[in-house]
Image 1 (cartoon, rainbow, N blue to C red):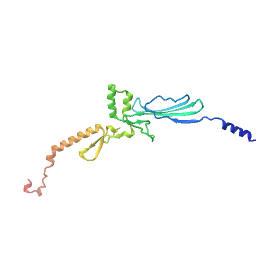
Image 2 (cartoon, rainbow, N blue to C red):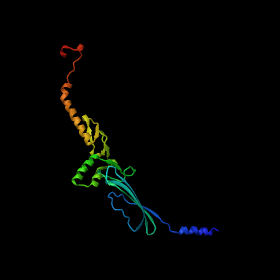
Image 3 (cartoon, helix red, strand yellow):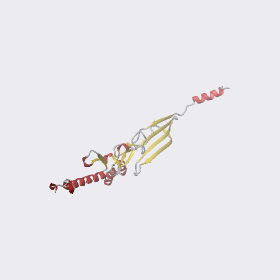
Image 4 (cartoon, rainbow, N blue to C red):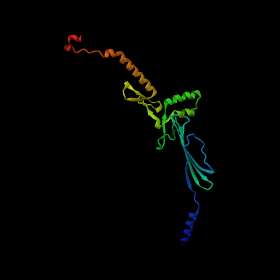
Length: 210
């Protein structure tokens, strides 16, 4: 009675099954051509592209391909397309992913510098936009105006020679230096009047106080 059922199980046990082999390619920062090595039959391709806000040419993406070999194996290939930012680091995601650096923002001062290079024809638009970006590890905030920018354009500033430093953007630094200069100039100008001896009240004055 159980022999026919046993033969069915033995048949499916001997039958070759498709094996799925997961392979992961390296992250592609240079946006190279993505081709699998060997003869494969494409089954499915999924591309998750995330454009960078404020730019026309910049985006990060994740591409996954499901391929089948001539022998029936199913292979999954995946890669991330990243951006080399102006800070020198590569990013492969806009939001935090817990494994690598992600997009910190677009520095307005880097954008001004690259705009000049773009205008002179030294670089193209894609290069200019990439150079204006920075990763989260190089992200900073001006303590004067609260502007987010890269660390390269943040400067220390000490008011009145104290050991308390402020980290300011170029615009706030320029304004702080002007304010400090005028304050010092006014102090020098009015110091003779600020150091005079104040007269005591009339009831307490002595002849030599006049």
